Image 1 (tube, rainbow, N blue to C red):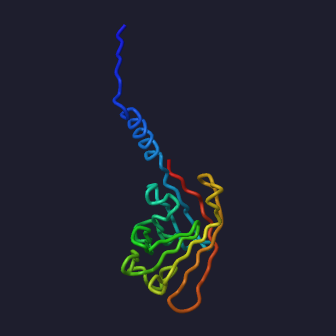
Image 2: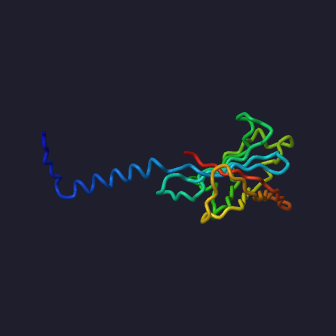
Image 3: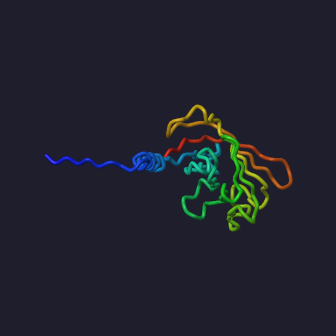
Length: 168
C-alpha cells in the first residue's frame, strides 16, 4: 500500500477549489432569449441575453429583426447589439435604436417590398410578457407586443407570439 502525504501550501488548496468552482460556473452559463413572430407571420424578432456574468446575464446581447417568409441571409432586416449601444433593455422590454452608425440595417431591404421599411424607423421595441423573477421553461410560449416607432408619423404596434429559448 502506497501512502502519499502531500500537504498544500497555505491557501493553495482553497485557491484550487475556488478556481474549479469558477470554471464549472462559467462553463454552465446558458444562452437564453426569445424567438418571436408577429401575428401576421411577416416579421421575426429574436432576442438573446448576455451569457457572461460580468456583462449581466439579464442584459440584452443581440436582437435580430427579419422577414419571416425568408429563410436565408437575405431575410435579415436589422441587427441590434448591446455592446455598441444599439440595443438596450429594461427587463423584458428590448429597444433597438435604428442608428445607421451602429445598427446593422440591411439597406437592400429598405424598400416597399419588405414588411417594414427600416429607413423610416427610429426604434423597434419588443415587449415580452415575461417576468424575470418567474422563469419560463424552454419551449414555453408567451405573448408580447412589438412597436415600430417611425421617424415621422404614428407608431404601429403588433402582437407577437414568443417561444422561450434556452441553450444547454
